[in-house]
Image 1 (cartoon, rainbow, N blue to C red):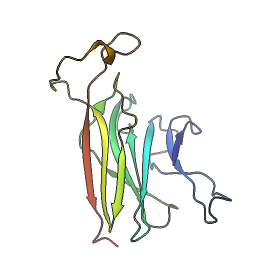
Image 2 (image 1 turned 120 degrees about the vertical axis):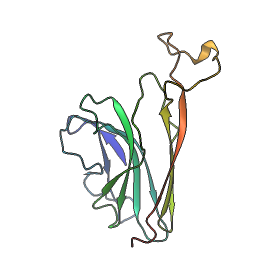
Image 3 (image 1 turned 135 degrees about the horizontal axis):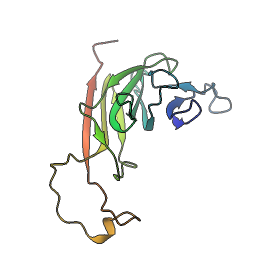
Amino acid sequence: TWSDFRNGDVDVFISRSADRGRTWTPPMRVNDDPVHSGADQFLQWMAVDPTNGAVYVQFYDRRGDPANRNTLVTLARSTDGGKTFTNYAWSDRPFTSDNAFLGDYEWLTAYGGRVYGIWAEAAPEDYQVMPRPSTSATPSGRPRTPTIIRVGTADFSAKR
């Protein structure tokens, strides 16, 4: 999986190989919002359930905001080897990630139809943090927006 601008905004794509990586299928969109919607989907993470082959991809998603700033997290699920995906809301409230570092803080695993994921979100404004050393500032000198880790769970074990 990866994300790129080929459709004019950032979308998440997947490609499959059935011959140990010698050849790959053409890229297919994972996010199911309209093409050219102006909404970005990015920073994806993928897991395959070894018990049933279901493919899961979580990603940051801005489709709910016409200004393309408020971010949610979406979980996409495929039960046909990654040929088609159904998207599900994975987080419950949007956040603005201005000046927050979200990268490197994702993880996703699946087993027996149960899915567990983590991701970073910008902390709510009322979130109190201890004073940070000056090294936490960005190159512009602005202190970095604090982040928190969220956990998502889904249970598809009865939906086979």
